[in-house]
Image (cartoon, rainbow, N blue to C red; front, top):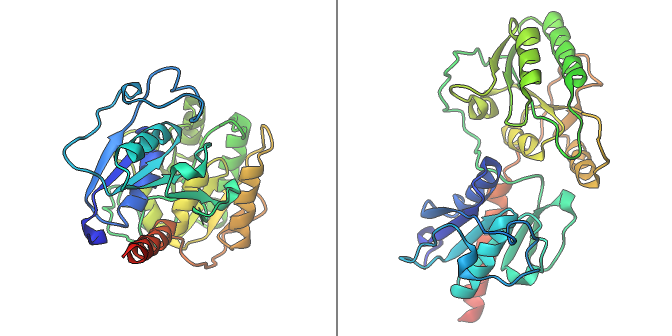
Length: 320
């Protein structure tokens, strides 16, 4: 069967980040994709895979039974269970898991793990940063009628298990942006919050930056994809590897506002060190003006899919 005709199942927990990674890889094969949002009952929902056996009745979601998948792509902990179950049911299917599955890699044909996870194996393919579904295009509608000639998109995350993002950090970030605007009035700022941005910080962004920028604080048309494809510069908080990886598809300079660690993370340090070494990012705190530089546009979904396609074809040829 041609790779263009393969039946693909994409398994995630339904979160946007997981869907972006799984579908980003899936669409590099073809558009014949069935998306499945998986959910499992307690205690499987709380435990790492491998502790308890896997049965069909642990899944709350429906499992399609009309067509047999050729490729199963999963992302996230909950989808590990369904991928392993489906691999046992459809033994000829190729199952690919994105991220460290926290279980033996022998359960999968391929594992795609970012370099900063430091996860290795004979069937492991390492990526630079996170996979995603964004491509290098700029045909997204300009809903806000923003002048993109000098567009600076500021993508604001939020506190997580590793980073502190309190009101003081938000004030420092805002003051830095205000100084940039004062020194260079032609810059157009687009401020985009995320689901982890607190209401307190959103209100601060509105009060401090509302008069000098276009703000999106969670309501109405989300300009995130427009920003990815049309910005000339990015300022991104350090708490999200996904947001930085997605911005890197543009090939445009990315400044990272380094939040203070709540607890040191070797994974985040590896990620930020790698992106600096590749000349994709620079520290926002240490700059007083935005400088232009270039790097190879990052499209890891396409590159990883190409490697897997080659290995699938090699496997078919070897079995003849």
